[in-house]
Length: 625
Image (cartoon, rainbow, N blue to C red; front, side, top):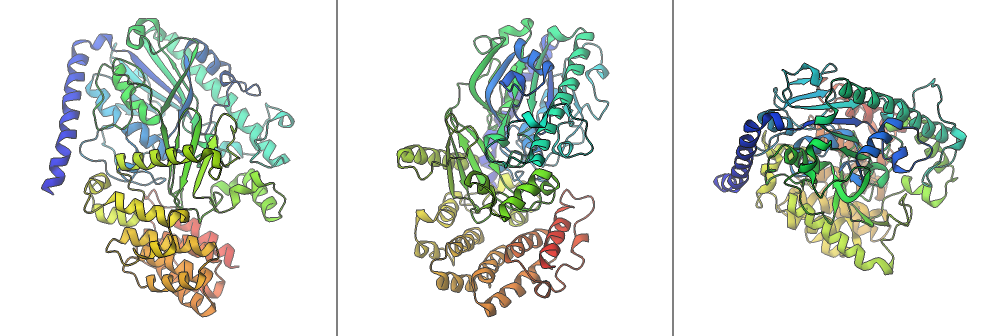
């Protein structure tokens, strides 16, 4: 405990020093602080006129881009709302403190503050209109006002303001709302090569563009209010989308379609000195930026040196840094489905490391299957009517993906096996690993085990303890388990009796992955049988899935009995893990027995997890019919 405290002292001191510096400047020059307005829209990528999309109709955003500067490549870091928003408000990668899972709820480390807290201490009036949805516990006094009525107009006098307006009209749920009055002609929409060209797909894509037009109108209304109040000349404006489009394979996935978002910044003449050499009105910046950079950038524009513990780097203001070589993305549990992938890109190439290659991209997700495109796409896959680029989504993932984003803007040509790109692959793989080490990525923990070991504290603090979380060693086992080319089954099984439950969890996953390859089946099933008696229920669940899927009838019966027992456990995370495994075992009604009885009422109604077990129950019941 003393060692951990000492490790945190430098970060805590750096934050205090940075804040004191910023406060000193802010308190003596409060009248000169720029107002800052963030306009955000949900579930939309750069399908805008100013980004070259001729089908789009977004005149207000286009006008903002013409007067400001747009960033060619901005990533949301996470391809879904809550983890992306958590990245923004903390200035840290949620993978470092356990907030990467969709709608989780974790504690930040003591060293960290959320950006509204810091901005308010600098003298800003901070408002949020109006969604929050963070994967972390927040202080009650985070915002001066956070509601549908929050507005800079509610501040006192000429106090500098930081205001967020978040528009939901472009949200995924709006793309499938029927009836709908069309604005765009669906016959003229471009269908990306990963989607089948059907009337349902065209309708959803056209309606997506319709909602962007409606959203653009709302952006224009806020801009009009700013001008009406005479504040346009004293306000720095940011516009961005919160992640890729709400279409399937956009939102939730680590491709450009899920991570690439528009970012436009407009700096008035009054504050040009803050961005000298960094900003040119009416231009496009090639700098790689991402959401983790937004907090340090705003602090920089407010005259405060960003604290050292922040993972992002300021791209504007007095404390702007050199252009980075890489930006990063992450995908973990999406609602009720567990997954783990990491992504990285430079100016040309994009690399994805899938740590759950045993699961397809298109694992059944209740919310996603409400979209007509998803349903017709899956129906065509089941009927064998898709080409390879379209069928890829529904098949088990490769361990690694590599794409040339210039030559392949929709990421359908995986270069990971290309001899000509071997050096690029190894460079990107190493850079991804180094990033995970640098931020002490906690994604290798089963979610429930992470929270158990954190014991009410922050998983960030747990991850700093190299004895309790030997990340480099765990990575080696996870890499060996999930990238079979990294070593043999014999190499993997050396870790089968490791004292670390995390390592054993990844060994179990490695057995499942190799079982799907159809090689060494007898040895794999025998090893899985032994791991079914593990002390960790997470190891038990994966081992039981392996034996149920690849063992004989008698072995399956034993494995299904264990899985259904785990699905009846008292721990919500154990239940979710077991139910995820049960799905892939295609259980019969008799095999499920009474395991699902009462499960839908398990999660507290106030919990952010409340829909996940009911969704899994519904799915399993539909399979077992």
